[in-house]
Image 1: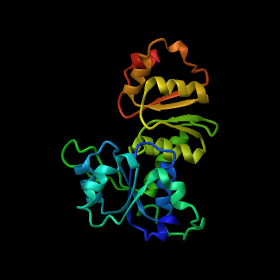
Image 2: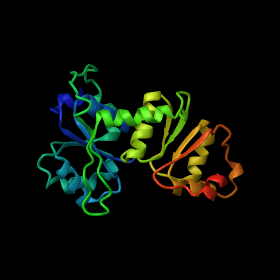
Image 3: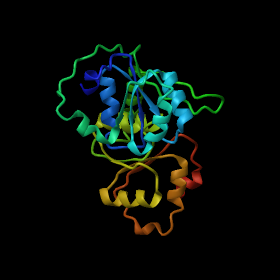
Image 4: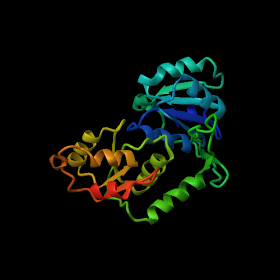
Length: 246
């Protein structure tokens, strides 16, 4: 409703420029409920990259993590469509007093674009990847069919939410099941293992470099990993010898 009250309409593009944050999911799905399209930005982007994506996506609003706002403000002078910039960490204050009832928007799941993430740009400028609501829900159903994640799971949310891996597995499949997620803004292997013990984590979703760091951590017996059921690896091939060490 906050977005609708600020003129966000069906088909508008709204960006998120933030590391993993506890309110990332609320913003992500709030944008979708308003009928708009989410475009997620790599939190490592600099001014030129921010400007390119927001301009190419025709974004009209952006949620930004305030410590990263400087390059956004620098890029904004060349983004005439960008009407609003809101601090993501202030979401509770932003929506305070706003009606909890939103105006329902009719969505065509097979045609309407839900998410517009951008490619890494290895062969040129990053390009928007148009994902419909049907695309996202299909991936969720595929994840649920594996039965490797259950509603009582406690999962680590360190995979970047802006990337399709974290977006699909954690922001989408995890929320569909109602798992408990422990959010990390950035990866640190020792902090991760401390959190595994502190919260009794059952599932880790990682990429091979993080699993290698886990395998190489000194004196691993000092960490309590007794609750851990599954370490999920994705985004690249995991060498069998690394998997065996973990």
